Image (cartoon, rainbow, N blue to C red; front, side, top):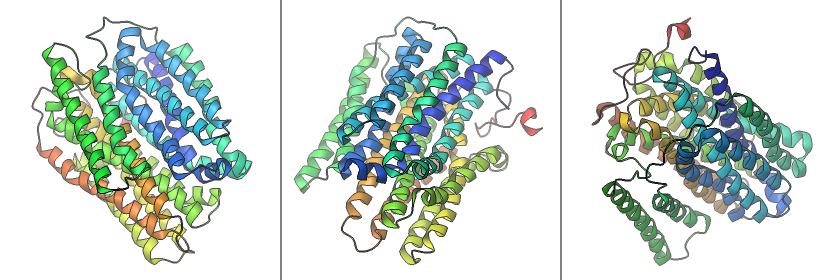
Length: 491
């Protein structure tokens, strides 16, 4: 049941959910068509990495400045502008005849998607309050996650129906009708733009430092350094960007200006730990999904529909797990997120073990079972973790907490997609038979990311906010900070 009693607010929510579905489905539906795109455009490994990771990179980097612009200029015009750019760049990418054209189009399209989703986050925070706000943001997260999980199945059907050479283009064109419908709904249902006085201007220094830090982490995987000295230079560049970001944030606070990352969020251990968990979960799940579709098609020789059938259990399990997650939360509290991470690690390890020991004929069935576990893990992790992070964010930073969380997830996705796909793409060519070793190594890296998140999740339960959190509202658990079901939900 949708949150809130106001029919107009619920209509706004449907527009926001449609935007989330459109922009997140666009990325996942392309994953299964990557092998066909690679053959059609004669794209290299570097081109593929930029096509799949560049979208998340520009998406994440636009979220926070887009939210700030929405505060100042009004959200509706920027929502419509971002969605228009998203649709137009989807057309350019779908009709591209060179890898560079698709790469640039996807980068700009990701920026448009980031501008749209930053207005979605701000609009939900404007329209809903208290428990309804948390439920609306939770629905947004779950809806986007389910759309991302369903993407490979839909992409497989399109490639099978249209053929490989045309199918990948149709996958990219899918954003056009979805985007146009969302545009029409937005024009009719989004509230009029409301402007506010600017608060110190955009933190362009902070945005630039985040971009430099992300690129310095991505590029070594896209173009591996040829020597230890080059690797050291990349590490020093990342450290320098991180130091410049910290220095710039300190300087803006000293001058009374709003920094990119609100100081109270940095000082809030629960928020920082929960965000780190979200980054590990989001990045590893997207990367694992991408390398699975590559392995099934280029490694095992499965068709796009057969690949979609292997990935479909993940979507089904995520839908079911998301629907019953509140019941698990009532019994386990914050341990629900930890349980979801453990299940995710076990599913990835099972996939790696099956790849190492099973014959090729049985491997798709085993990987489908592993996908069932991965989907259930995501359903138990995504929404409960987001709810506990945002509800325990400091009250003075509640407005920007959602944007920073989404940005962190997208930046993590860009790095993970480039790193894990690089491990697979550079390990698979030239191997005899199916590239099992390359896939196993990539999956183990994803499992390692989730394993690293486990102690952070456990620590999150024991740490209490150092600042006053957002007010406790009926329908939330004071003990866990996670949404409890309302009487209507129970019915």
